[in-house]
Image (cartoon, rainbow, N blue to C red; front, side, top):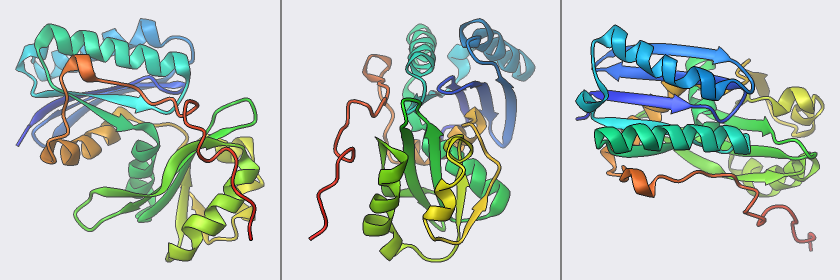
Amino acid sequence: MTSKILAIDTATENCSVALMVDDDIIVRSEVAPREHTRKILPMVDSVLAEAQLTLTQLDALVFGRGPGSFTGVRIGVGIAQGLAFGADLPMVGVSTLAAMAQRAYNLTQSAQVLSAIDARMNEIYVGGFHCLENGDWVTIQEEAVLAPEFLIQVFSERVQPFSMGAWSIAGTAWKAYPELASQLHLQISDSGVLYPEAQDMLVLAYHALARGEEVNAEHASSVYLRDTVTWKKLPNRK
C-alpha cells in the first residue's frame, strides 16, 4: 500500500500541507486569506525537508478539489498538478467538505457530520457524511450549493428520515447563519471545525487509493458546485 503521500489544500481561507510517511504525518497549516500563492510552496518544501524526501520519492499527491473559493481551489489544483507533472506522481482529489467531516469525527467521534461552507452570495456549500466501521466515508447528503433556507427542506425530505442519532456540524456556514442548525430539528453538536485540513485529506485519500481512484495529473479536476443547479430549486410538495 502507498506509504508516502503529500496533500495540499488552499480551497478556503486556510492553507495547509501534510506529508504522510508510513505512520508519521508532518503538517503545516495557516489561516492566511489571499496569501495561498505565496505560502503553499514553502510549506511543501518544509515538510519534504523535515522528512528528508524529494517529490520523486513520493507515491501520490492529494489535493483539495473543492468546493470552496473559486480562486483558492484553482490555486491548489494548479500547484498540485504542476508538482505532480514534474515528479510523475498520480493524483487523488478529495472533497473539502468530506475532509472537514473527518476532522469533526476525530474531535467528537460523531459518525454523522454535516459540513457546510459559507459560499457568499447568500448560499452555502453543504454535504452530509457517515463514517463506516472501516474508517471510510459514504455521502448521505449529496454535495450541493444552495440557499440556507433550502437546506431545511432538503434535509427533512431526503436525509432526516434515514438519519440515526446525533450529528456533528463543521464549517464556516454555521457561524454565518447561526440559526440554521437549530432549524434542522436534530440532535447536533458543534465540532468547532471551520476549515478543511490537508492532514485529514490523507485519511480519505488512503481509501480512495485502495479503490484505485487515482488519476494522472492531466485528468485532475476541481469541484465548484455552482455549475450544478439540481438542488437550487426543489419541486413543491404534493
